[in-house]
Length: 237
Image (cartoon, rainbow, N blue to C red; front, side, top):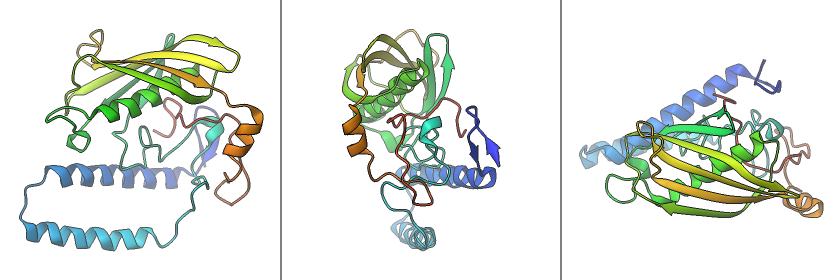
C-alpha cells in the first residue's frame, strides 16, 4: 500500500495500472482524431477496441459507487475528466499549489478542438471549474459550483503548453468567490481566458440528499464529508 500527501492509503500496483491504461487510452483518443489511415484499417481497429471493451466490462461499478482508488476526503479522484490519471477524457491537467492559490499545466490535443486549431470553449469551462475549485479547497474552503463566468479574451491554441491559475478572492459563510486565468505557459501574464466562480456549501439536508447513494468500493455508504469533485494538486500523479 502507498499513501498520498494526505496520508490516505491506496493500492500502488492498481494505481500504476489505472494510470497506464489511462495514458494508453488518451493516446488512442488522440490517434483516433488525427488518423488518416484507410477505411479498412479503421474497421480493423474498431474491432480490436470492441474486444478490449468487452474485457474491461467484465466487472463494472454502478453510478454512485466510488472506485477503489478514490478518496473524496483527500480529493483523490482518479477518473476525474479534468485531472484523473485514469480518465481517457482528461488532458490530464496537472495541479499544484503556489503561494496564494493553485497552478495547473496541460497540453490540449486535437480531441479538444473547437474552432480549427483552437480549444473548444466548453473545455475551458471544464478546466477552469476544476482549477477554481482546487483553489477553494487549498484555501481551507469547499463547496459546489453555483456560478461560473468566463471571458474569452483570445483563443487557446492546441498542442501548446498552457498554464491555469486561480485564487480565492472572497469568502464568508457558505460562499466563496474564486478567480483565475488560462494563459500560454510562455506568456503566463497574458490571459487568454479569465474566469470567476462562486462556490457554495449546500445546506446539511441538501448534502444528505445529494450524496445519499454514494458508496465506497465495497458498497458501504460513504458520502463525502467535503462535497466537491476537485482533485488535490499532486494527488494520484
